[in-house]
Image (cartoon, rainbow, N blue to C red; front, side, top):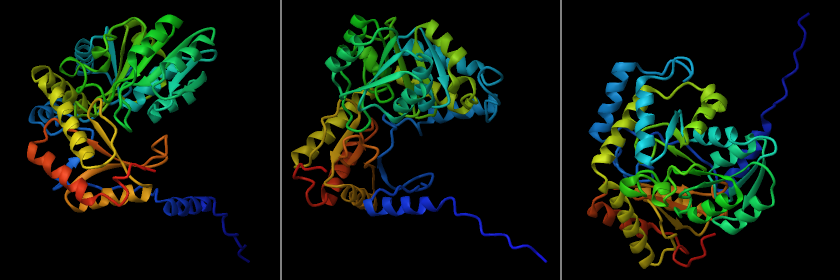
Amino acid sequence: MPQHTPDPVDVFAWIDAAERAREEAGLVRTLRPRPPLSPLLDLASNDYLGLSRHPETVRGAQRAAECWGAGATGSRLVTGTTELHTELERELAAFCGFEAALVLSSGYAANLAAVTALSDWGTLVVSDAGNHASIVDGCRLSRAETAVVPHADPDAARKALAAHEGRALLVSDSVFSVDGDAAPLAGYAAACRDEGAALVVDDAHGLGVLGEGGRGALQAAGLAGAPYVVATLTLSKSLGSQGGAVLGPARVIRHLVNTARTFIFDTGLAPAAAGAALASLRLLRREPERAGRAREVAAQLYGRLTASGLTAARPDAAVVSVRAPSASAALRWAADCREAGLSVGCFRPPSVPDGISRLRLTARADLTGDEIDRAVGTILATAPSGATEGRGR
């Protein structure tokens, strides 16, 4: 007689309940594959300088793939380091004003590498409350004591550092991705100098936009190359490619090569991405005015939208954040913009630490005056009821 096999327990039934809760809260996220040439005007990507499709960037990727192959073939410590990787590292460090650089597979991996390799049991990591999720995850994985301090508050950071005996580091975004506001780097640096702590700054949204010719927020603040400062960045925003990097004193970079798990145990960055990033970096050196143009476009978007009654955060770099009355209103607003031919970002909880939903606009250096007019007109025409009342929640 065949034996009855009981039905297995539905081990993922809890997912259905979680999905229903997301739907009721208007927080469902979906993937939208885009065609090679989208008809939408793009104010949603992080392509701040408009280089992801620049002919020189694309040729850089093509040449690298033809020379080195499609993949890095292994971790950086085995077969994944090519001469192209080391060339990119040298030029990145020189451009940003640091002694050395280390390229990783993503900006996320770079933040995990820096935070975890520079801290351990007994270390205090002081983290700005507005930091990116990759920094938050780095703190969680570091095994260090973490003190989350109020956003952009050097005094609070100083007090946390002063109360700790032993190794410490302060970690912050340079430009925060939600509202586009800049960190008080001078105040953070002073606290670190006075308290003998390291300063780790994620310059993902500063590279290519801030500093002399786009050399980044740390160069603009006079902190590039300081012996207690480490920078992380991404190659996927202003440089229009893929990957990340850690920059700092040579001994810090050597330490990461030997201890950073997201470097040691990850396949190296694909040669095409390294070649594209290097081509964009060289283009930015030749055309430094691109950085100023990105900031100019951001200022225009902010000025025109706020003059029309919308509530927006004053941009310190290339991110313009416009508040929405609710999460569902933000989602509908972004969808209406899309239907009108404009792609904008939509930030809702839990991506925003303050619970305020927003449209997130990217001020790209290659936007024309007509495109700025079109973007502003579309955002205003589709604005939901309450968007001009400043409530924002």
